[in-house]
Image (cartoon, rainbow, N blue to C red; front, side, top):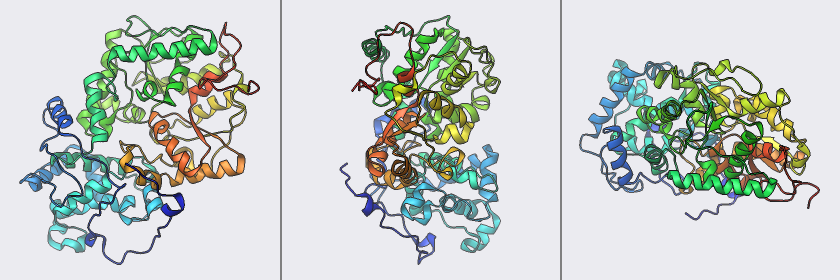
Length: 539
């Protein structure tokens, strides 16, 4: 869709106290605030793959008055709600424990960027909690609105669809909650309930469908995937004079490497992918790629617990088939939340694999004993700490770099220092954004959890104001021109955000910067970087 609202126009909003009770304000579907529904053929396929998780398939449009809900939609929602309350103890706790203290209220980037009270995490959760009180608590049944309860009407379903797909599950709000309520899991439950009545979005379910069918979000077939790798190897040879090896689907290697398919599909992720190839070739890593487990990302996290489990399982099934000892994972976001917070109870333990040990330094990664999978920045920072790489950081001297902590690696696995250590070893100019916008408190890219779609651009730019403002600050103060990140979704969502809020800043993967600085054995004199732009001094 065409979208050309200027930043100064987007900032024309306020935080006035609403004149009406939130229960009396119907949902409003404006262009740029909602995502397109899932395509029927995608749902048909997924329904077969999951044995019925996506019923009531039809053509429908959120702006229509009639959403063509099934006749028994209330019963489906109530039954699904009860099943999830019984299955997930945490969900029941989250429904009961909130005291509406407001600690989370101003922490959501969508509320900050738009001023809509229903995007306060406490109120977004209340959209679900009010139905819980009305249907499942005695006080709610007797006292109704006095107890914060309301009836399950069609406008409630519309409201859920609008606002639970205006949540990127970034969990910034949860960081500030004194009770530890995980608002992202509330969003996950709401989306599962919406699936029961046929309300879901295509930008999530099509990648999930592709990943189930081909092993990756993009639907890339094995021969095409390998062909893209060969093109990258040719580019590396043109830049360095070295023909790197790219073992694929080979049994008997020590390591399986898995990264998001976005890194092989589109710039700037392709340069990060080239960085992996160059690093592994230089250190002589005994590893293989897989064209079947060709995706680390997991859109099941935004879909349903069964889909999440199914998509995560393929990585371990392939590790077992290929006979590797452990897995290294690339620069991805949601892959790492699934791995660190759900893997052991969902698919694990991975007792047929070993605790990762670096074959180059001998470091044993005890933190990965359960999953047998380590993050690429953990692996690379360990190489650097032990002096195993020859680096020339001056090759990145044209860049003044800042780092965006991706939500899931930062808040779900505490991966905060390793990426910074890597960047500081390959770049001479590094600047942090303000401390309340980084590390555990990092702002979201506003396109996570499957919302990085063009029809949602207004909300993406509104939600991106936190990160954009911090980026603009260091751009103006420190002349920052490079934003590094360790997430494929970020590499897709941050370029338009940077162009909008901080024009002139370019987005890079961390291992693209590593590859620029890496001095490879036998390389020809390097004149250009991976983007085939002149290195500093070679202009």
